[in-house]
Image 1 (cartoon, rainbow, N blue to C red):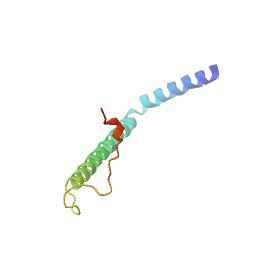
Image 2: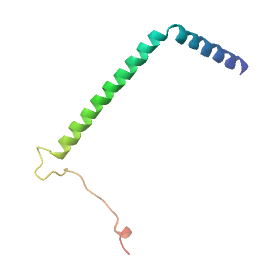
Image 3: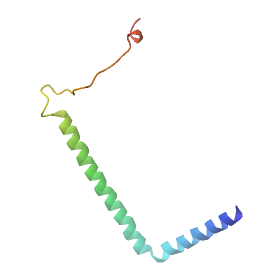
Image 4: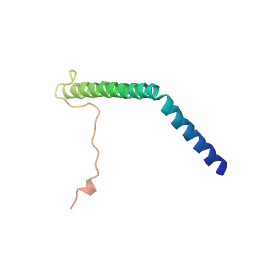
Length: 80
C-alpha cells in the first residue's frame, strides 16, 4: 500500500509539472473539450425540439393520439 501511495504521489507531481510546463497545450485541449461539449448540447437540444414538435403534430394521426397505447389499472385500488 505504501508503494502504491508513493507512485501515486510521483504521478501527481509529474502530471502537475507537465501541466505547468505545457499549460498552453492543455488550455487548447480544455477549450476543444468545452467547444465539442457545447456543440453536442446544441445538437441534442435541436433533436429534442424536433422530436417534441413531431409528436405534437403527427401527420399520420387524425386526432393526435398514439396507437397501441393502453392504460391498465386495477379496480380494487379505486374502491372506497
